[in-house]
Image 1 (cartoon, rainbow, N blue to C red):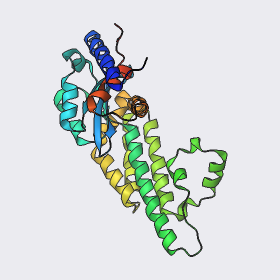
Image 2 (cartoon, one colour):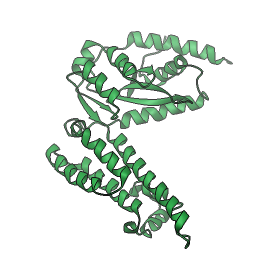
Image 3 (cartoon, one colour):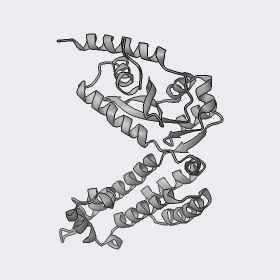
Image 4 (cartoon, one colour):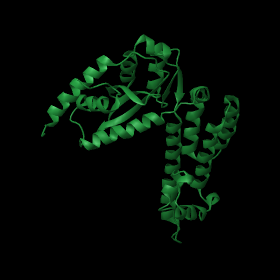
Length: 281
């Protein structure tokens, strides 16, 4: 059966509308909010997820306080009362909208985004140091080809990569110091108690802010500013890992369609495949 994209969209749209009408007003303990690129030119969508059921609740166009407010305002009173925490990035627009619409829910800054910030800091150190070595080092010693090693968890190394990393003299390079600080922060999440995690953070923060590595210092100060909402992790132990998994599925939907002409097409496709809806006639 040969159908045009417009015909497929209309079928999906009716199915999604049917599924949304049938959706039960159940309690949702944990929500996740994440953004996803939509089209070129820094176009984004904001996605609201049920972290426990691993489903998309709703999608709004844009990456703004208004988009998040619209998402949270669409929730029923029952859902709002039952929500205990929301996993989000450290973007201030998320915090403001959540505090207004879900005043009783904890904000949990997501550890995967924090890991991303630390990785980006190390990547910037590597980039600057490699450029400097290539410009001044007549012996030909550079850090070219090692970027992957600094940014990937060691447990994911191949044997060849382990050998290559072990041959690097960490203390000789700024990126080695940055890598050590980044890796040390992973222990923060392993603590059983908030108090112990807070003590660890204070030690780590001193180390990071005295490292003389500007990208690391910048991230450390950002974490310090938001530590209240990072420590809430130990009360709920939620992350946006589910949202990241959903993001991967959203990317597949976008790739399979070779992009979408407009937001409505994209939203309908996401809810059709990932909304957990009863879409059958």
